[in-house]
Image (cartoon, rainbow, N blue to C red; front, top):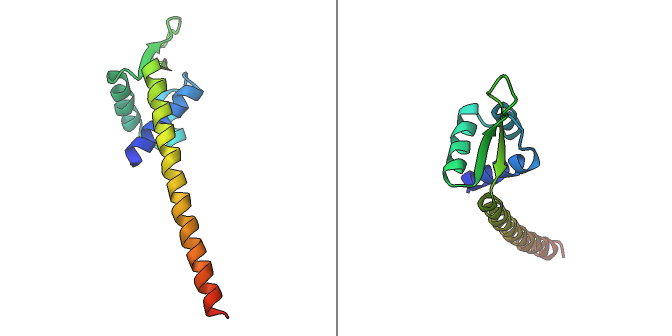
Length: 109
């Protein structure tokens, strides 16, 4: 589950700002640069992102990360699954809270 949340968070950051460096992504997500690099390569191999370097950049180490249509679709699916999980968690907590309130009221009659 955590891995899917990590991928969703990374896809969201790339979507928000394709020109983030690996260091920026690592800082924003709390990952090591090695983990970011590994994840970006995995996303590229799945066809979810394209990696391009700035042609006019003398440095040649700055890249942009572009979500592909397949990546956007996957981001949507992961977001939908995340929301469904959170809604289920909310319902479970709400049921537990109502039970505790009922128990409390019965004890204090």
